[in-house]
Length: 120
Image 1 (cartoon, rainbow, N blue to C red):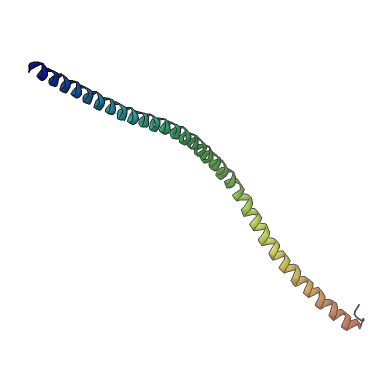
Image 2 (spheres, rainbow, N blue to C red):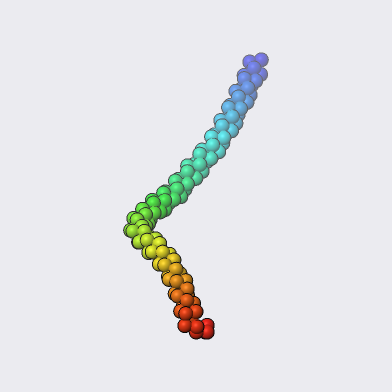
């Protein structure tokens, strides 16, 4: 009986050993899968960090460019004000020329009526 009992215990021990080995292999496989996913995530994060670093460089360059444009446009403000003043003067001059033209036309018609010159 002892041999049958020992055979049963040996069989039970072998079965438990197989069970633990299988569970261990399964857990190792799941951990390896999780490890692979984490490595992939790390690589993706590094790639995204590189990409955003490039965007940061572009944004920094654009900021410098905008600052340069602002400084250049401020130098044009004086010219724009001068052009506005000239435009205002030209408008006033056109009004004076128009009034003079009407006055000359009026004088011409008076001269024609005084000297009775037929209109041209």
